[in-house]
Image (tube, rainbow, N blue to C red; front, side, top):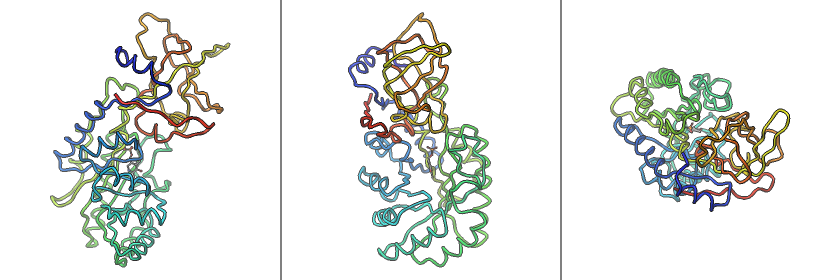
Length: 384
Ligand SMILES: *Cc1c(COP(=O)(O)O)cnc(C)c1O
């Protein structure tokens, strides 16, 4: 992908490693997602935790997306960057009092509440600051997302959401809380989901729970089905933009709703992943009896996904290398951990010190997870 001379010249002048964001691709992805959602009257809140780079966020905000936050700082950042408060939601199993108060003061659209105790705490804090909190109750639908177990969230064994056995009690508590207003229900079953049947199963569960509440006389205005749409890590060039039409179509077909009920989504990865690439330089090469190593100047401190959940990222040598001999490399970083490895036995043109390497599809859960471990430098980034 990175074979045109303008890009190569820019990359060569830039200190590595750095994130490269393709803003044209980002814009095109957002445009397609927004069009597919608008057509069905669906609302998208972008999940900030996937990437909260200021420039990226500004573009998402300009396109008219809402913000899905998982900390008080994310709520504050969304406000600072101009996301309207009535398009901000706040989710997470462990909201601290200070964070709840921040969100209450900004009068955000809704808290996605994950336990009965949290309902009581939000109610008490709202009373203290003289506000009423709009909430959606996060229900654990027990749907298997068929994704990596670290990014599965909707099973009974996961920590997320109010357990089904507690919903009767949660409904009663909500009824008794004067400073809480139930807007709707919230679900999120996991991330990097590429099997559309998972979303179909989710719709079936959502319908059941919506009926359960409506039979008890509770009106559900907002149905929030979370995020989780996956991207193609194997073939970023063939599939740079997820099939938003197919994704929204499933919900359009299988979610039961009336004209007044709103359907909300919280997409993160699908909107930003393909627009980001981690660009790194080969520091050293070394070959032993069994292995060829490419030692990069980027490691788990810049991109943690491969180490954290054995995630696959496509690795490419930057620049044309027509006819070069291919070798299988273990592509590793400089950090003092054996897990600091981006890929094993990766076929690449024979490489040498100074060559540039692209680690693709790194726009989501990349820069945001960067750390200073080993007292590494702050992560850098450049834009197209
Ligand atoms: C992480 C998260 C999202 C976004 O997930 P993606 O897989 O990036 O789309 C949405 N909602 C909640 C509650 C989350 O925790």
